[in-house]
Length: 78
Image (tube, rainbow, N blue to C red; front, side):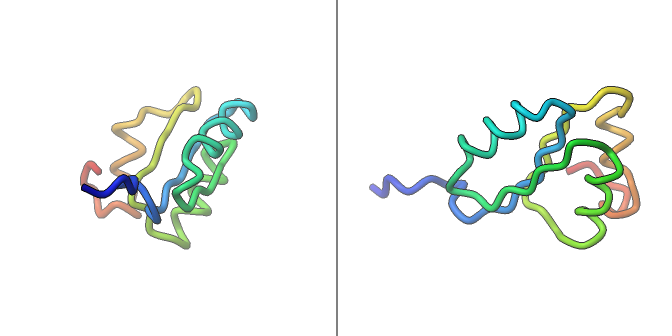
């Protein structure tokens, strides 16, 4: 059995308005390709230029379900 993480090499966008959370999540997911966005607008810039395997969203004022239906997802939940 392999001990390699199933997350190895996955691309993940972490969106959080707390810098320490962005840093901690990035450290914990060091086997992944992690981009970090501190706000909605930055996240949308990343999403416009790259396709992610996972998006982790924790920012005030944004409904996660609405966010997942933005044009970059083709209107479907991830």
